[in-house]
Length: 184
Length: 184
Image (tube, rainbow over all chains, first blue to last red; front, side, top):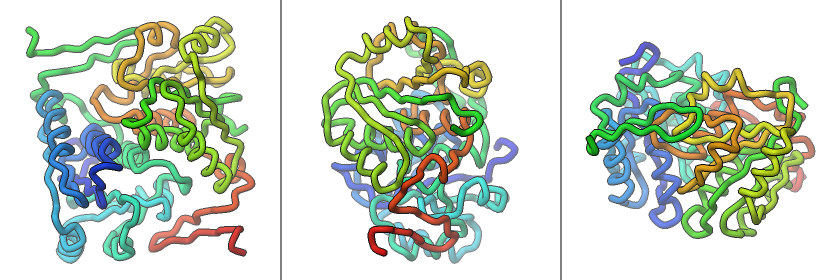
């Protein structure tokens, strides 16, 4: 656990539609992983291919990121909210501005970041401890999640977060440098 | 022009595939707009629906954001590079880490941020003044663009950047507050 990280961080993707959202949802889960989440939870259409994509990236690029499908996301959220043991952050373009909200979001408890699809039930706004917007312009849940997590948690420590990687990309100003253990 | 913004900021989306990338490209252009770009340039498949989405959001939510299709993006990049009048930033997971690269990126000249699709020709790495990665984990070009622009330029001034809006979302901790001039 890095300083400044909640003890556990999940991202719940509501309202996934298998056909329309395939790549957005895939990017959303990868963004969750890259910016420090421990888990992505898919809700909406059951879509094993999304989970396979995420698990395959984790297998190659390291870390303990997990993924699962949640059949009843609202019941799940109600339970999480009622327990009082989890901080629920709902990302929505209608919420409070992220720079203002972030200092009040607890890092003591496990956190659940909820990312909506097209239509989010109004109950989600009430179950959330924080309704947070990354700007109030229409853009993308992928952009919102990335900027929120990066602003909230800061840079992810690659070595600790993505240990056991078989593939590593080495930063380079002029080309591609990839270490691939499989090819050694 | 806000302090800390280049005089003009374009985002070039390479390699768009109409079927596979429709929503990712749409989100990418909206992210460019929301995080301070003046223009998005689409390359790859000619796809009027992407331009229509972006223009429609600008019409409702304000500002002077424009969009266009570029038939020959590599020729265009060569010309921009040769002119020396534009700073070209190529976002790629193989590039230098963004926190380290950002202080050396000029704000004096117009900027062109290039966002790749699946296969970016290696020439793009050489034409770019800066090859920049937002982390070296696989995630999303939408996430990368958002975090890069937000880190580089800071928060966008909504009032000046999105003037003339017919719709405005007002930040709110507990629900949706939207001002719609059309309904007055």
